[in-house]
Image 1 (tube, rainbow, N blue to C red):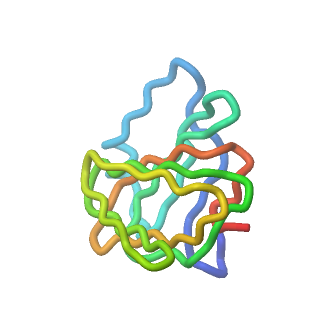
Image 2: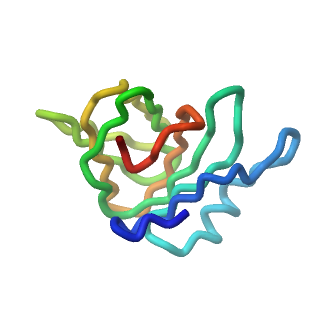
Length: 124
């Protein structure tokens, strides 16, 4: 699924089945767009996604779902109402449901995300 109104490449289809090896460096190397969100695996009622991003997303919230972001490469700025949190490799943050937020990446950044499988990535 590509969200044309925001120019993000968001793929909701689970790419890897149980027992399949997920090679994150290979995925990153093969991604050429500046904002890619790919669903890697389903774990119970949640999914693990990788964001390979550069630039900024729009302000949004998720009324019924928490999100977890974990940076593996680069630098993620998470704008929240009234403050910005900077995340570097090895750091993560949970955004609780209902919280307005905007992820930004001033340089190419790789982020693992864990969220429910029915979340709408662009917000409610």
